[in-house]
Amino acid sequence: MTSSMAFQLGASSSSSSPSISSWNHDVFLSFRGKDVRHKFISHLDRALLQSGIKTYKDSIDLERGEEILLELFKAIEESQISIIVFSKNYAESRWCLDELLKILEWKKIMKQIVLPIFYKVKPSEVRKQKGRFGEAFTKLGEKIKDDIKPLLESWKKALEEVANLSGLEYLAGDNESEFIQKVILWVNPKIVNRTPLSVAKHPIGIESRIRDIYQHLSIERNDIILVVGIFGTGGIGKNYFKRYL
View 1 (tube, rainbow, N blue to C red):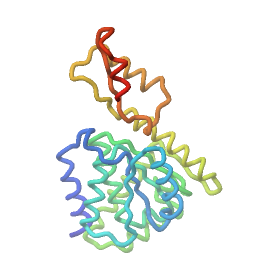
View 2: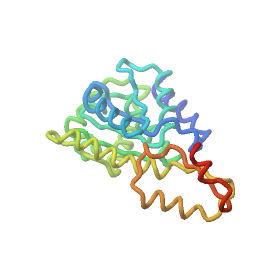
View 3: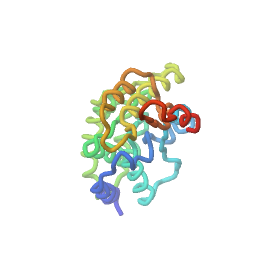
View 4: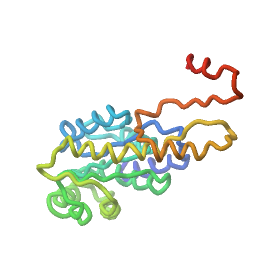
């Protein structure tokens, strides 16, 4: 099965659009393993998890089979946010580029939030496939088989599209810890804003109060556990009941 066929199979699964309740991951991490797995991605993943943000990252460094690729597509569909870490060798991997196509497809279908991180490469290098990033993309073009050559143009358009999105740039010499905190501060409010509170089927006068919680309180993903509303006339024991929650 070619990479093109695999992508079509992954896209076909999007016909059943998931609801918010079917999200299994807060963040999907897309990256080139040999560049960043054991340093930046490891530290970013740990920091996200410590902030209560559930991540999905590919734990396999070996050449991927089609079954693994489809599993990654499924994980993308089940994630609220995709973070794409563009490193110097990202474009050398057709699997990374297929992930990119899937992420942008899901962005259009389900309005998935996408954050590009330019890790020691410039957005213009990604957009125009120049510099070290461009060299990696050229190397891929020389290696792939003729039957998937048409995908090169799709990958180019995807790289241009994502490089035009608002993202974060990590430069050589930057403080990694401070940069990762920037990523968490970017992610946290977006996760909170897309996490619905469970309330009564026909609530009265509660919408404005929910808005106040989201807009005026400094809450993060870890802070959302359970909200229980107790109402009733005075003297029926509401405070007594609260002690047992």
